Image 1: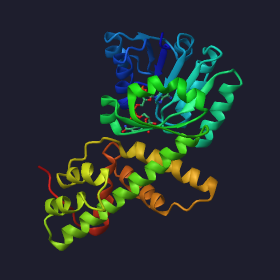
Image 2 (image 1 turned 60 degrees about the horizontal axis):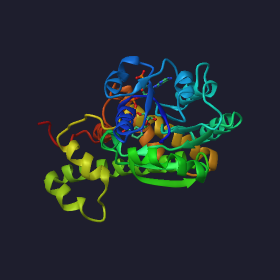
Image 3 (image 1 turned 45 degrees about the vertical axis):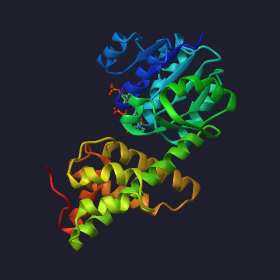
Length: 298
Ligand code: NAP
Protein backbone atom coordinates (compact mmCIF):
# COMPACT_ATOMS: atom_id res chain seq x y z
CA UNK A 1 0.00 0.00 0.00
CA UNK A 2 1.35 3.45 -0.87
CA UNK A 3 2.20 5.85 1.92
CA UNK A 4 -0.33 8.40 3.16
CA UNK A 5 0.59 11.97 2.23
CA UNK A 6 -0.10 15.25 4.01
CA UNK A 7 0.17 18.46 1.93
CA UNK A 8 0.66 21.91 3.50
CA UNK A 9 0.24 25.09 1.39
CA UNK A 10 -2.37 25.19 -1.37
CA UNK A 11 -1.22 28.32 -3.24
CA UNK A 12 -0.58 28.69 -6.99
CA UNK A 13 1.94 25.81 -6.89
CA UNK A 14 0.65 23.63 -4.06
CA UNK A 15 -2.90 23.20 -5.34
CA UNK A 16 -1.73 21.77 -8.69
CA UNK A 17 0.75 19.43 -7.00
CA UNK A 18 -1.85 18.23 -4.47
CA UNK A 19 -4.37 17.50 -7.24
CA UNK A 20 -1.75 15.46 -9.08
CA UNK A 21 -1.06 13.37 -5.95
CA UNK A 22 -4.78 12.60 -5.69
CA UNK A 23 -4.92 11.71 -9.41
CA UNK A 24 -1.98 9.33 -8.90
CA UNK A 25 -4.02 7.49 -6.26
CA UNK A 26 -2.35 8.66 -3.03
CA UNK A 27 -4.46 8.99 0.12
CA UNK A 28 -4.11 12.71 0.86
CA UNK A 29 -4.71 15.01 3.83
CA UNK A 30 -4.34 18.76 3.22
CA UNK A 31 -3.98 21.91 5.32
CA UNK A 32 -3.92 25.55 4.23
CA UNK A 33 -3.78 28.68 6.41
CA UNK A 34 -6.73 30.12 4.48
CA UNK A 35 -9.00 27.10 4.92
CA UNK A 36 -11.32 27.81 1.96
CA UNK A 37 -8.50 27.04 -0.51
CA UNK A 38 -8.84 23.34 0.46
CA UNK A 39 -12.48 23.11 -0.70
CA UNK A 40 -11.89 21.85 -4.24
CA UNK A 41 -9.34 19.27 -3.02
CA UNK A 42 -11.81 17.99 -0.43
CA UNK A 43 -14.41 17.75 -3.21
CA UNK A 44 -11.85 15.71 -5.19
CA UNK A 45 -11.37 13.25 -2.30
CA UNK A 46 -8.77 14.72 0.10
CA UNK A 47 -9.19 14.78 3.89
CA UNK A 48 -8.63 18.11 5.63
CA UNK A 49 -6.67 18.66 8.87
CA UNK A 50 -7.14 21.52 11.35
CA UNK A 51 -3.40 22.21 11.78
CA UNK A 52 0.02 21.09 10.45
CA UNK A 53 0.41 19.12 13.70
CA UNK A 54 -2.82 17.18 13.11
CA UNK A 55 -1.96 16.66 9.45
CA UNK A 56 1.45 15.23 10.37
CA UNK A 57 -0.11 12.76 12.81
CA UNK A 58 -2.21 11.34 9.93
CA UNK A 59 0.57 11.08 7.34
CA UNK A 60 3.73 9.09 6.55
CA UNK A 61 5.10 11.71 4.13
CA UNK A 62 4.48 15.41 4.79
CA UNK A 63 4.98 17.91 1.96
CA UNK A 64 5.17 21.70 2.42
CA UNK A 65 5.03 24.41 -0.26
CA UNK A 66 4.65 27.84 1.36
CA UNK A 67 6.17 31.24 0.58
CA UNK A 68 9.41 32.03 2.42
CA UNK A 69 11.87 30.77 5.06
CA UNK A 70 9.93 32.02 8.15
CA UNK A 71 6.74 30.43 6.76
CA UNK A 72 8.40 27.01 6.40
CA UNK A 73 9.83 27.38 9.92
CA UNK A 74 6.31 28.19 11.20
CA UNK A 75 4.52 25.23 9.60
CA UNK A 76 7.26 22.68 10.35
CA UNK A 77 8.71 23.81 13.71
CA UNK A 78 6.14 26.30 15.09
CA UNK A 79 3.79 25.87 18.03
CA UNK A 80 1.23 23.84 16.06
CA UNK A 81 3.82 22.62 13.59
CA UNK A 82 4.58 19.28 11.96
CA UNK A 83 7.36 18.44 14.43
CA UNK A 84 4.81 18.13 17.26
CA UNK A 85 2.56 15.69 15.41
CA UNK A 86 4.78 13.61 13.13
CA UNK A 87 5.49 9.98 14.01
CA UNK A 88 9.08 8.89 14.34
CA UNK A 89 10.13 7.58 10.91
CA UNK A 90 8.07 10.15 8.99
CA UNK A 91 9.53 11.96 5.99
CA UNK A 92 9.15 15.72 5.41
CA UNK A 93 9.62 17.07 1.86
CA UNK A 94 9.84 20.86 1.64
CA UNK A 95 9.10 22.06 -1.91
CA UNK A 96 9.16 25.81 -1.14
CA UNK A 97 12.11 27.97 -2.25
CA UNK A 98 13.91 29.04 0.93
CA UNK A 99 17.38 29.59 2.42
CA UNK A 100 19.82 26.63 2.05
CA UNK A 101 21.27 27.32 5.53
CA UNK A 102 17.83 27.47 7.17
CA UNK A 103 16.98 24.21 5.38
CA UNK A 104 19.99 22.48 6.96
CA UNK A 105 18.96 23.82 10.40
CA UNK A 106 15.35 22.61 9.95
CA UNK A 107 16.57 19.17 8.82
CA UNK A 108 18.77 18.93 11.94
CA UNK A 109 15.87 19.89 14.24
CA UNK A 110 13.61 17.27 12.63
CA UNK A 111 16.35 14.61 12.77
CA UNK A 112 16.47 14.97 16.57
CA UNK A 113 12.89 13.57 16.56
CA UNK A 114 13.75 10.80 14.05
CA UNK A 115 11.95 12.68 11.26
CA UNK A 116 13.79 12.69 7.92
CA UNK A 117 13.75 15.67 5.55
CA UNK A 118 14.38 16.40 1.89
CA UNK A 119 14.55 19.86 0.33
CA UNK A 120 12.89 19.52 -3.07
CA UNK A 121 12.27 22.96 -4.60
CA UNK A 122 10.79 23.11 -8.08
CA UNK A 123 10.99 24.96 -11.37
CA UNK A 124 8.39 25.03 -14.13
CA UNK A 125 5.83 27.54 -12.89
CA UNK A 126 2.12 27.19 -12.27
CA UNK A 127 1.81 25.46 -15.67
CA UNK A 128 4.29 22.76 -14.60
CA UNK A 129 2.58 22.33 -11.22
CA UNK A 130 -0.82 21.84 -12.86
CA UNK A 131 0.46 19.45 -15.55
CA UNK A 132 2.78 17.43 -13.29
CA UNK A 133 5.84 18.35 -15.38
CA UNK A 134 7.91 20.22 -12.79
CA UNK A 135 11.70 20.02 -12.54
CA UNK A 136 12.49 18.98 -8.97
CA UNK A 137 15.97 19.41 -7.42
CA UNK A 138 16.53 17.39 -4.28
CA UNK A 139 18.87 17.64 -1.30
CA UNK A 140 19.00 14.86 1.30
CA UNK A 141 19.85 11.20 1.87
CA UNK A 142 19.59 8.72 -1.04
CA UNK A 143 17.27 6.28 0.78
CA UNK A 144 14.85 9.12 1.57
CA UNK A 145 14.93 10.18 -2.10
CA UNK A 146 14.07 6.60 -3.12
CA UNK A 147 11.18 6.61 -0.62
CA UNK A 148 9.90 9.97 -1.94
CA UNK A 149 10.17 9.05 -5.63
CA UNK A 150 6.62 7.71 -6.26
CA UNK A 151 5.14 10.94 -4.84
CA UNK A 152 7.64 13.17 -6.66
CA UNK A 153 6.94 11.38 -9.95
CA UNK A 154 3.27 12.32 -9.59
CA UNK A 155 4.29 16.02 -9.53
CA UNK A 156 7.36 16.33 -11.71
CA UNK A 157 9.15 15.06 -14.79
CA UNK A 158 12.83 15.93 -14.29
CA UNK A 159 13.80 14.72 -10.82
CA UNK A 160 17.45 15.19 -9.85
CA UNK A 161 19.12 14.25 -6.55
CA UNK A 162 21.81 16.91 -6.34
CA UNK A 163 23.40 16.37 -2.90
CA UNK A 164 22.91 16.59 0.86
CA UNK A 165 20.29 18.70 2.70
CA UNK A 166 20.39 22.29 1.42
CA UNK A 167 21.86 21.32 -1.98
CA UNK A 168 18.40 21.27 -3.58
CA UNK A 169 17.85 24.87 -2.45
CA UNK A 170 21.33 25.89 -3.65
CA UNK A 171 20.63 24.48 -7.13
CA UNK A 172 17.22 26.21 -7.14
CA UNK A 173 18.99 29.53 -6.41
CA UNK A 174 21.40 28.83 -9.31
CA UNK A 175 18.25 28.32 -11.42
CA UNK A 176 16.95 31.71 -10.27
CA UNK A 177 20.23 33.43 -11.21
CA UNK A 178 19.82 31.97 -14.71
CA UNK A 179 16.19 33.15 -14.92
CA UNK A 180 16.77 36.76 -13.88
CA UNK A 181 20.06 37.35 -15.68
CA UNK A 182 18.33 35.93 -18.75
CA UNK A 183 15.53 38.44 -18.31
CA UNK A 184 18.09 41.26 -17.99
CA UNK A 185 19.49 40.17 -21.38
CA UNK A 186 16.01 39.90 -22.96
CA UNK A 187 15.20 43.43 -21.73
CA UNK A 188 18.43 44.98 -23.00
CA UNK A 189 18.16 43.24 -26.39
CA UNK A 190 14.53 44.26 -26.98
CA UNK A 191 15.21 47.91 -26.06
CA UNK A 192 18.20 47.94 -28.43
CA UNK A 193 16.13 46.43 -31.26
CA UNK A 194 13.29 48.91 -30.66
CA UNK A 195 15.65 51.92 -30.64
CA UNK A 196 17.29 50.65 -33.83
CA UNK A 197 13.95 50.51 -35.63
CA UNK A 198 13.87 46.78 -36.51
CA UNK A 199 10.65 44.76 -36.32
CA UNK A 200 10.44 43.19 -32.85
CA UNK A 201 8.30 40.17 -33.83
CA UNK A 202 10.80 39.31 -36.56
CA UNK A 203 13.67 39.85 -34.15
CA UNK A 204 12.16 37.29 -31.75
CA UNK A 205 11.48 34.77 -34.56
CA UNK A 206 15.03 35.14 -35.82
CA UNK A 207 16.86 34.66 -32.50
CA UNK A 208 14.64 32.38 -30.37
CA UNK A 209 15.80 29.15 -32.02
CA UNK A 210 19.48 30.12 -32.12
CA UNK A 211 22.35 30.10 -29.64
CA UNK A 212 20.73 32.90 -27.61
CA UNK A 213 17.43 31.03 -27.20
CA UNK A 214 16.01 30.40 -23.72
CA UNK A 215 12.76 29.57 -21.92
CA UNK A 216 12.43 33.20 -20.73
CA UNK A 217 12.96 34.54 -24.27
CA UNK A 218 10.55 32.05 -25.86
CA UNK A 219 7.78 32.39 -23.25
CA UNK A 220 8.11 35.90 -21.84
CA UNK A 221 9.53 37.72 -24.91
CA UNK A 222 6.16 37.54 -26.77
CA UNK A 223 4.36 38.63 -23.58
CA UNK A 224 6.60 41.72 -23.37
CA UNK A 225 5.83 42.67 -26.97
CA UNK A 226 2.09 42.56 -26.14
CA UNK A 227 2.75 44.42 -22.87
CA UNK A 228 0.97 41.58 -21.06
CA UNK A 229 2.28 41.67 -17.50
CA UNK A 230 0.17 38.84 -16.03
CA UNK A 231 2.39 36.76 -13.74
CA UNK A 232 3.55 33.19 -14.06
CA UNK A 233 5.86 34.19 -11.21
CA UNK A 234 5.38 37.51 -9.43
CA UNK A 235 8.01 40.22 -8.96
CA UNK A 236 7.46 39.93 -5.17
CA UNK A 237 8.38 36.21 -5.11
CA UNK A 238 11.22 36.76 -7.61
CA UNK A 239 12.57 39.48 -5.32
CA UNK A 240 12.41 37.05 -2.38
CA UNK A 241 14.48 34.52 -4.35
CA UNK A 242 17.06 37.17 -5.28
CA UNK A 243 17.39 38.11 -1.61
CA UNK A 244 18.08 34.41 -0.91
CA UNK A 245 20.66 34.35 -3.75
CA UNK A 246 22.48 37.44 -2.43
CA UNK A 247 22.52 36.11 1.17
CA UNK A 248 23.80 32.68 0.07
CA UNK A 249 26.37 34.20 -2.32
CA UNK A 250 27.65 36.39 0.50
CA UNK A 251 27.99 33.34 2.78
CA UNK A 252 30.11 31.44 0.24
CA UNK A 253 32.04 34.46 -1.08
CA UNK A 254 30.74 34.29 -4.66
CA UNK A 255 30.26 37.49 -6.69
CA UNK A 256 26.67 37.96 -7.88
CA UNK A 257 26.67 41.18 -9.87
CA UNK A 258 23.85 40.36 -12.28
CA UNK A 259 21.60 39.17 -9.44
CA UNK A 260 22.36 42.34 -7.45
CA UNK A 261 21.44 44.48 -10.44
CA UNK A 262 18.16 42.60 -10.98
CA UNK A 263 17.42 42.78 -7.22
CA UNK A 264 17.70 46.57 -7.34
CA UNK A 265 15.70 46.95 -10.56
CA UNK A 266 12.92 44.78 -9.05
CA UNK A 267 13.08 46.93 -5.91
CA UNK A 268 12.40 50.03 -8.06
CA UNK A 269 9.36 48.27 -9.57
CA UNK A 270 8.08 47.15 -6.15
CA UNK A 271 8.31 50.76 -4.95
CA UNK A 272 6.24 51.74 -7.98
CA UNK A 273 3.53 49.30 -6.83
CA UNK A 274 4.22 46.62 -9.48
CA UNK A 275 5.17 43.71 -7.16
CA UNK A 276 2.14 41.69 -8.30
CA UNK A 277 3.18 41.78 -12.00
CA UNK A 278 5.17 39.02 -13.70
CA UNK A 279 8.97 38.86 -13.44
CA UNK A 280 9.26 39.78 -17.14
CA UNK A 281 8.04 43.29 -16.20
CA UNK A 282 11.73 43.77 -15.31
CA UNK A 283 11.95 45.51 -18.70
CA UNK A 284 9.89 48.39 -17.26
CA UNK A 285 12.89 49.39 -15.11
CA UNK A 286 15.07 49.53 -18.27
CA UNK A 287 12.37 51.53 -20.04
CA UNK A 288 12.43 54.14 -17.29
CA UNK A 289 16.18 54.58 -17.81
CA UNK A 290 15.87 54.60 -21.61
CA UNK A 291 12.93 57.00 -21.74
CA UNK A 292 10.97 54.86 -24.22
CA UNK A 293 8.90 51.66 -24.23
CA UNK A 294 8.93 48.50 -26.36
CA UNK A 295 5.95 46.84 -28.04
CA UNK A 296 2.33 47.82 -27.65
CA UNK A 297 -0.68 46.60 -25.67
CA UNK A 298 -3.32 44.71 -27.71
P1 NAP B 1 1.37 31.53 -3.32
O1 NAP B 1 0.37 31.25 -4.38
O2 NAP B 1 1.55 32.92 -2.83
O3 NAP B 1 1.03 30.54 -2.09
C1 NAP B 1 1.71 30.61 -0.88
C2 NAP B 1 1.18 29.54 0.04
O4 NAP B 1 1.92 29.61 1.28
C3 NAP B 1 -0.30 29.74 0.41
O5 NAP B 1 -0.89 28.46 0.57
C4 NAP B 1 -0.19 30.46 1.76
O6 NAP B 1 -1.34 30.32 2.57
C5 NAP B 1 0.98 29.74 2.36
N1 NAP B 1 1.65 30.47 3.44
C6 NAP B 1 2.42 31.58 3.34
N2 NAP B 1 2.88 31.96 4.55
C7 NAP B 1 2.38 31.08 5.44
C8 NAP B 1 2.50 30.93 6.84
N3 NAP B 1 3.25 31.78 7.57
N4 NAP B 1 1.85 29.91 7.43
C9 NAP B 1 1.11 29.03 6.70
N5 NAP B 1 0.96 29.11 5.37
C10 NAP B 1 1.58 30.13 4.75
O7 NAP B 1 2.85 31.06 -3.75
P2 NAP B 1 3.28 29.94 -4.80
O8 NAP B 1 3.50 30.59 -6.14
O9 NAP B 1 2.41 28.75 -4.67
O10 NAP B 1 4.77 29.62 -4.24
C11 NAP B 1 4.98 28.72 -3.15
C12 NAP B 1 6.49 28.43 -3.11
O11 NAP B 1 6.89 27.83 -4.37
C13 NAP B 1 7.36 29.68 -2.93
O12 NAP B 1 8.47 29.38 -2.12
C14 NAP B 1 7.79 30.01 -4.37
O13 NAP B 1 9.00 30.75 -4.41
C15 NAP B 1 7.93 28.61 -4.95
N6 NAP B 1 7.82 28.54 -6.41
C16 NAP B 1 6.84 29.20 -7.09
C17 NAP B 1 6.79 29.13 -8.48
C18 NAP B 1 5.73 29.84 -9.30
O14 NAP B 1 5.89 29.91 -10.54
N7 NAP B 1 4.68 30.38 -8.72
C19 NAP B 1 7.72 28.35 -9.18
C20 NAP B 1 8.69 27.67 -8.47
C21 NAP B 1 8.74 27.78 -7.08
P3 NAP B 1 -2.61 31.32 2.36
O15 NAP B 1 -3.41 30.70 1.25
O16 NAP B 1 -3.30 31.32 3.67
O17 NAP B 1 -2.06 32.68 1.99
